Every structure is written in C-alpha cells, then in structure tokens.
Length: 186
Image (tube, rainbow, N blue to C red; front, side):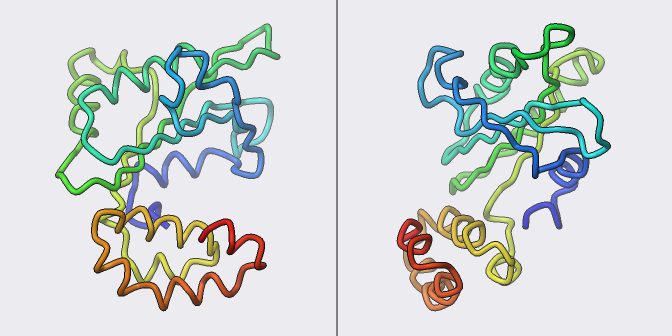
C-alpha cells in the first residue's frame, strides 16, 4: 500500500521476492535486548539465484534518535545466513513503520550520515513509512484485508474518533475473512 507513493520502499520491494520470506527467529536475543526489532527476515532476490537479503521491519510510535544505531546493530549482529559458510553476511534492507503523532524524518539523518562518510556507511538500505501519509481509501480498498486493517488501526492508534468513523469500512473488510482470522484481528 505504502509503496505506491514511497519511492524508497518501492525500490526495496522491487528487489526482493516476498514469497521467500524466512523469519530469523533468534533476532531478539542476538542483540541482547529482547523486543528491540519487530521482525527480521531472510529473503531471496527477485532476480533469482542464491542472492539473499536481510529484511528488517521495525515499528516506532515516537521519534527515536537511536534508530540508525539500532538498525546498524541488526545489520551487524542479526543479518547473518548461518547456513552459508562462504558468504554469511546478508546485505540489509530496513523498513521503519511509524505511526506516531510527532513529525519525524529519520531519512534526513540517514542521508546526512551517508553523505558525511561518502557513502561508505551505514551499510543498509533504509525506507521510512509514515502511516499518516497512507490514503485511507487506497488502504481500505487493498486486496489484503489483514494488511489494510492493520495499517488503518496503527495509523489511528492515537486518534480514536477518526478510527471509530472508519469502523463500518473496517467491518466490511473483516467480513471477507474466515471467522477465525477476523477473530484474531479483532
């Protein structure tokens, strides 16, 4: 949904085969701070072959000055393909999903660090998805009901009046799901 208007996200997603997502379950323990990353995956390149990337999905509800170092720790400590003795390091693609109410542009910090070191660091690609920028109609029209409901719910987590105004549309999306799946979302 967000990749329609977010070029950085579109570029990252254009290079990976999302059907090959493989969770890195030990991600939390690797950096010694349980719960620091939301989701970490290995994923194959869309071009095929054995090229794999590390894909990190991180959620923030408020601005964080430490986001670059957090992603950097993951790029170094977690994004490792332990089954590949020849080249175990996974180039990392980080996607930060933000649903806070304060203005925040971590991409500016990323660009500044990247420029300061002449492109040598940080060693990861970075996309920032501000859920406030998602169009509600496009989101609710999306084929993936779970993703649409999740995005709208996160977007309006701090605006209950707006969320309640969208409940009729959310209920329509819930009705297309099997009852066990809709019950989990509710």
